[in-house]
Length: 317
Image (cartoon, rainbow, N blue to C red; front, side, top):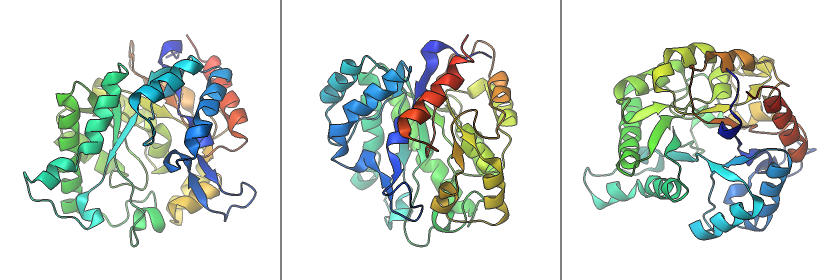
């Protein structure tokens, strides 16, 4: 399948997920979407996305922005918006027990309602939905043994599925279709966990919005997953990996950040994944979004966007 020019977007994560000192792999990890100071830099980042040749960018309204101020900023760059990313945490991971039907339980989904509001405001009817990552002390999936299904617990997975199902219901009530987004380091990491979630939640509520790179990192065949769930595929994230680093991280499990610092993530075409086989596995006449994403750039962010766009250009219909 060739890519549709009007259905390809970039997640500008190259400019957001950084090391405090790019020359020092032991320096602090930064996530600039959470930094209020990033608001001043955001317009320049979006301009670089446009100048790299992308017409669309992932919707990401900062906590410090109103919908209207974000709209003006995006309009100033001439970009259009592609579906955003919603995540929902397991209350127990935060030491919280929510009584069914309580005000606290209802409010737990306020962030999901906000994402539905954002999506509707900007005319988007789909969203990537994932369990939230936890960096709390003792969370071995992020802090010690990532990509291998560490500390699997069937009862906890059932709770995660319940929470995801409720989040999908909240979104559906507002006319936004959720697609399950697998992510290494979350409680939906392995193939079995993905399959159990998709089997438990009706396709009418929850489609499949796979992250191709995170499937491969966890040792899952992305082509097989796309073919198996072709009938409920919504949107996808496309990234490339150094598969040697990925395999080593499964053979000798390590913390999430350690594996990333080893150079796991690569720009499309610079890693070892057969991304053309991934595109070929997409259903005929499928019209979902393809989100290009480089979780940690292997070069300057703008250069990373340029390389990503060159890969896209070679595969446009």
